Every structure is written in structure tokens, then in C-alpha cells.
Length: 446
Ligand SMILES: Nc1ncnc2c1ncn2[C@@H]1O[C@H](COP(=O)(O)OP(=O)(O)OP(=O)(O)O)[C@@H](O)[C@H]1O
Ligand SMILES: [Mg+2]
Image 1 (cartoon, rainbow, N blue to C red):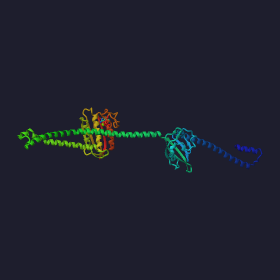
Image 2 (image 1 turned 180 degrees about the vertical axis):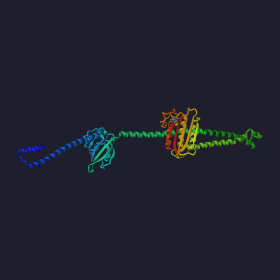
Image 3 (image 1 turned 120 degrees about the vertical axis):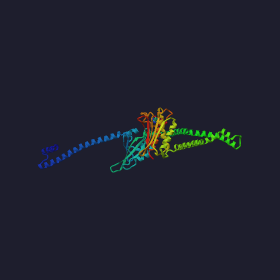
């Protein structure tokens, strides 16, 4: 029996109300029901309090998260009135929350950004997020530039009720990006300039090689022509005597004194020699045209044997040192590419090898090219000291050189690496176990 029941019993016992047994039963039933309702109410209240506490906790959590977010957050209604902001936004504007909430967002952005704001506030479908960039009005004038995302809000009936703007400052990023962009352009310009310079340098080496090559045949063509001119004087004098002009006398004696017979004998070899010189000069000129005038990007079928032979010859000639050169080149190998550029690669590698073998007693260079499947494998080996293990990771970097100032730019391998890569291969370097270095690359066979 609970409190209400005993209270009723008490009233009844005082005689104010008469209870018979039946009525008493009905009353007790009513009281029991009231009791149940009461305890339900109590339970609901406890539940409610519990739920309320949970809700408060959840709200505190959300607020805490929003406040901790370093991005700015602004909630606006459908006409742009600010409903809520986080501290990151207050800090950006250096204003109190009372000074922001309730105002139109148009009044707190930088005046020049009006058109962008219209885009960010426009009503739209649920998943339609709009990006933009804004500056806000601050006490000091204008804030840093912010990258803004605007997400629309809708009520439970799907009506547009405003937007949530989130954003982060990008001024610093933008400045860094612009600086990077500028630096990148500058780097590209310098790189182009360097490639040009290296081209000029290799052109210079080529010209030196050509001069050296041409010197020999030209000097004997020149010498032969000199002799022919002397012979011409003697022959003219002799013919004058035959035809009765000039001084008469014993023709036989004159013929002897003018050495006519020797002259006639010498004529054949002289003309042959001159002819050979001329042929050699024209060969050199032909080679030159093939090597240095092929335009960048011009692709042709390149014969490997001829390519390597000419390149190695140029490089060895230019360096003017005695090197035991061994060629191990399979015949009839072809690649498609730019002959002038590939020539430059071989020249660079051979020149490096020769430089490396400067102090080697019996310098030996082995250049090989062989077919392996669908590729042609090129190898250039020397018996120099090999590449210093500390440097092996850096030799392909631009400007990396161990040569003295003026002796190397450190661009040879960098440029060669680029050319080989453009031709579909990869230039690599290794030291041989028995000493010396080997540079190798493979190109697709044509
Ligand atoms: N065959 C080799 N043996 C040992 N070291 C080498 C060999 N080839 C290259 N190197 C090293 O790699 C460095 C870079 O070579 P790279 O051809 O790029 O420049 P460089 O020869 O120094 O100058 P440049 O080619 O512009 O005249 C060289 O300075 C040298 O130290
Ligand atoms: Mg070099």
C-alpha cells in the first residue's frame, strides 16, 4: 500500500466518506492507475533529464569542434544575414561575435568582392557546393585572401534556408605559388640557355675537330698545287723551245735540265694525291652536314656502326691522346632517332672516358653495340680509375663536375641522359670490378 492509498483509507476511517467493499475496490483500482501514471511520469522525467544532459554534451562537443577548427566558418540565412560564426572568423575580423551575428554578410566583406559574394549566396540544390575567393573588411582595411566553399542549407521540406561558408587564408599560398611559378620560369630559361651554351661548346669542339681533319688533306692539296705550278713554268719553257720561241739550243739538253721526264712521271701521283685530298675534304664536309645540321626533333634511321665510328673518331681526335680503342659493333644495327644528338652522346661519353684515363698507363676504351631482343645495347668502358663512389649518385646532375674550372661544365652527362631518355632509353653508369667505368644504355631497335 502506498502513500495515496493510505491517505484515502485515513479519510474513509474518519467517517467523512463511507466505503463499502465494492466501492473501495474501485477506488483502489483508480489509485493504482494514478500511481502507475505517476511513476511513468517520474521515469519520463528522469529519461528527459538524461537525454537533455546528452544533448548538452553533444552540443558542447559540436561547439568545441567548430571552435577548434582553424578554418573560418560562417552560417548565413537565405538573405545573407549572419546566424553563427566560429572564433577563427572572429579573430580574422578582430570583432566580437555580437558585432557580427545579425549583420548582413555583404557589410563585412571587402567592398570589391560583391559580385563573388552573390555567387556564394545564391539558392541552389543540396549537393551544389560553390567555390570562391573573398577578402573581409577588417579594422585595418582588408583581410588576407580566403578560399571559400559555400554549401547550401535546406530545411526538412527541402527549402533553401541559407549557406554555410568555410574558408582558409590562401594569400601566403598564392604568394608562394607565384614565387614558385616565377622561379620555375627562370629555371626553364636558364636551362634553355645552358643547353644552348652546351650546344655552342659542342659545336666549338666539332669545329676544332673539323679543322684538325681538314688540315691534313688541305695541306697536301696545297703542296701538290705548289709543285704543279713549278712544273708548269718548266713545261712552258720547254714548249717555247720546241716551238722556236725563246732561246734555241739543244732540245735534249734543255729537256734534261728542266727535268721534263721526271715531271711527266710525277704527274700521275700528283694528280691522284690531289684528287684523294679533295675526296677526303668532301667526305668530311658530308659528315659535317649529316652531324651538325640535323635539326632537333628530326628523326631518321641511324646506322649504329657509322654513328659510333664517326663519333669515336671525332672524340679521340679532339682529345689528341693515344688510346687503344676497341670497337665491338655488330653490323646492320639501326635505331630511329636524331643522329646529331646521338652523336653528341657518344662523343660526351668517349671524351669523359678519355679524360678519366689521363693518368692511366695503357688507356683502353671499349665501345660495343649489340642487339638484345628488340633493343640495342650500347656500352662504353674505360680502364681509368672508375667513378668515385661518393659521386656516383650525382654525376648526372647538371653542373656536377670533378674537373678543374675551365675544363668541364658538368653538363655533358646531364645532356646525354636527357637525349637518351628522349630516345626511349636510360643512361646508367657503373664501376667495373676489374677497374674502370662503364656507361651503358639501350635503345629500341628500328
Ligand atoms: N668514365 C668516367 N670515369 C670516371 N668518372 C667519370 C667518367 N665519366 C664521367 N665521370 C665523372 O662525372 C662527372 C660529370 O661528367 P660530365 O660529362 O657531366 O661533366 P664533365 O665531363 O665534368 O664536364 P663537360 O662534359 O661539361 O665538359 C665528371 O666530372 C667525372 O667526375
Ligand atoms: Mg663530360
